[in-house]
Length: 212
Image (cartoon, rainbow, N blue to C red; front, side, top):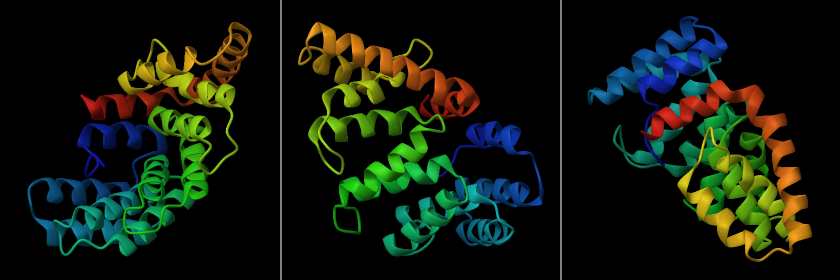
């Protein structure tokens, strides 16, 4: 988990959803967290969450998971992530996928991991797309399907993204497929990119910026 949402990513997300009072409180909370004023950070994020900002819930989840603002509490982190994800936070959905796949504070639940990865992937999170693809390759939480696995990994290999992990996964998986299977997987992968990633390019770019 990369930690609390960076201001650069927050700015990109604000441009997508509009800057209201809740987002302003979220921005204040993130700024306070980054300078180590954790009491102020939690107050601002709680305020924003109560006003319905799903990104505030995401950041509360990060704070509980990191354990800097108080004792690490994965139960609270999961609850916050879930509220954020159910409210539409792609970042929270991805974080839930990671928790259930890794069994961080909960039992491993690959079906839940697949559910939340898919929710995030369908809104432009290429990290989730890559992880979902691996679950299909491994047959964890979903029925094993190498073509489907490659198709979900493929968007993260697009020239506009070129995620290193996805590139390695795609190359390894390609060697396991016949030419016909690879052609079908690539066709399906392109369709996923056009359907789920092109319309959400701003979010994809925000996540890329956060990795730099």
